[in-house]
Length: 418
Image 1: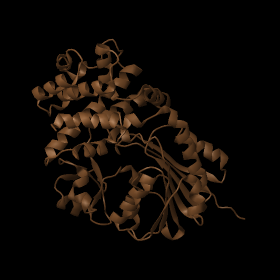
Image 2: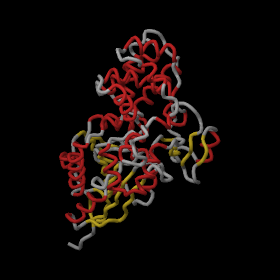
Image 3: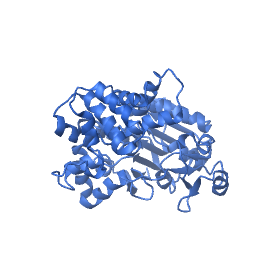
Image 4: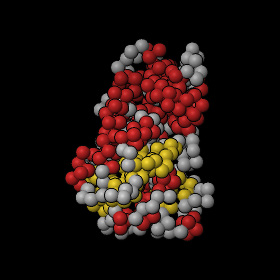
């Protein structure tokens, strides 16, 4: 198959079959009979990813020109638009011939070629700064634009939208349990230090996950906001650590840097995929005393045997961080799922609270931004659980220095004299 055929195949697998983007690429390339190069795969990823990141604006201009058409026809035009306007990875003459042969739409190639300036993609009759404009500009569903503007207000939401679209060099957390900052920067010349912290900016090219620094555990590809969250916590493994995770997070990486590889903890994974990801992380880090369990929040009571001093809770959430990480994430966001997500977060928080010892901390964190998942939920919890007080509460955004979404709250259980 030609590279552009794979790109079209990837899009159909993502949009019509619901496969995650990375799995769709692997699935399509399995059909490749010949050996393929890294550039071949990179081109497919670039163009199909670009088409997904411009899904809403492409849908708008295509529907204005052709009306309602089948999704497969639309995705075919999306490959052409993404390559012609942005990526320019595929031979355009060959791609145009493929599109002409594959579609019955009249003038499809001419339609694609009529767009050359990305700034003119959004139709002129759509008011600049309107909700429809923001949806098309940032590839977000209208309901999410509404929610963010309501939660953040006009000024903050404007910075939030801009922060999502700005390109940033990847940041990594230097594993100072394994290597000093000075040794790291000397060993890996394609990194520079970030803000005098044990954090480095990746200035090289290629997939950072395959970099020697990551493979050797000299650095972790993780949100550096976890260091900010944990740096002032009084974490004593001898007094007990428990974790409930319903969402992918990098907490074990940060705890390893802070406590070494022999700390004891109980980890309850609310989602099967997260359970297997956690097992892989434990093995990679060489953690010797982290016990893992698979079960939802209602099963915390069966997994944790006694109260602990520090209980970390990261339930399954809307994970808006995915909007930065994955070009297909907007497809998984469903407004009708919000109420159930929030109910599960509240359940996880309430169930975990029973296993925090007096004087201990309950640390709630979610890599997202939604007041109903964060501040409002925490304040409802505090009204219900008078034995807890709020020690710290923060909401971080992609435009902050930590360049990521993270809401966290540290809640302390009071000591009684009984």
